Amino acid sequence: MRVSVEESGAFQGEVTLNIAGLLGVGELLFRLYPNHFGHLLRVEEARSEGKSLPLDAVEPTVLVVQLPSELPQTASLHLRFSGVLPRELLGYGIFAHTARAMIMSQFYPILAPWEGEWLLHPTFPFGDNLVAEAADYLVFLQVPSGWVPVASGEERKTGWNTWQINGENLREFCLVLVREYTGLVDRWADVEIRVFFPFGFDQAGKRALAIAKEALPLLTARLGSFPFPDVDLIAAPLSGAGGVEYPRLILINQDYALDPYTDFFAEIVVHELAHQWWYGEVGTDQVAEPWLDEALATYTSSLYFEVQGELEQKVREWQDRFLQAKKLNPQASVGSGLWEFLGRSGYAGYVYAGGALLLHEVRSSLGDEIFFSILRNFREKYRWRIARACDFLGLLAEELGPLFSALALEYFGDQPQCQTEPTGSVNPR
Ligand SMILES: [Zn+2]
Image (cartoon, rainbow, N blue to C red; front, side, top):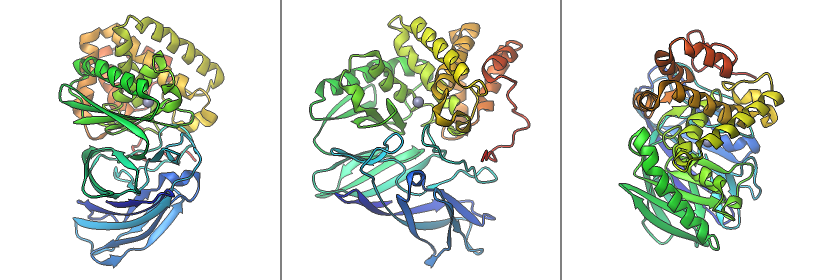
């Protein structure tokens, strides 16, 4: 991918995809996620083998590229795109031009997953909307003077304002440009940890680094090695979220960096670190089954609080939040898709708190050894793929036996419909 970003927040790029196994696929579907909030991202042209390909927009976030019938099984496809970062924080503010950070989440056309049919969900102003396969990225970037890129991958300066970034097995490529920021680098074992905070947030930067260094040994002891060679922690203005996870990159809402000694600040850092396993490495359908990666991230990040004797307190918090969610939105359950939480009603209480409680009950029943071996098996089996809730629940059911039905009833309101549900065809609108 070649991308050039201007001071104004306008950007242009061209992405080349090398795709194998295209035989019989007549079209490719790409997601233009920023367009949930307006016409912010545009694909101007698609080409393959020197020929222009017809484009069709089904809706603002879905682009269809028609493939010629004679296309070989393996082909290169070029998409030329452009866009502009708004000056306001729309949604969580993850696609925005602010005074010191240009946050460019999902700024390029992203191939929808193919599971015998295209996996296509509507987009929502909350939750994580991206569902994508992991891919290898090589990015040539030009930035405006004074801005420094922090991205999913390894950044290498190649010229005055030019950079080359590469990363393997990325579910998406996140790019943030910063200015007037301080960077700190440290290591835990073979993982490089880098933090980037605006000038004046030095305490928060040091604290974030310290928390990451404390959390990594706890998480890796239970889950196995960290999925990536490095991770970047960036503070930036966000709205309505404490943090947001990307492969090899974590955004932290800088409002919470004003007092980095709170439990919540630590929770943001550790929760988003846990997502490097649950979302980054083991992909999930974050729209239809948002609980899967959120419950796993919430529960495994509580390992950090457990060593400080605070697990019981976390469990009580989850119980309160879960109870409140059930009152607010009695029709929903832990297993609900984003569309069942319109207005965010009960979303965090079910998906994060309820899901974490379920995992806590499973761990209490099975004991640490079996519980964490289930998590490691799940990780091994679905590494760099998109796992389904049923894949995980199947592993739990095997160990839990008859107890599984009672837990399913309590958290999902019913037995999960694992056999009959077709994969990839959920379209609730
Ligand atoms: Zn999360």
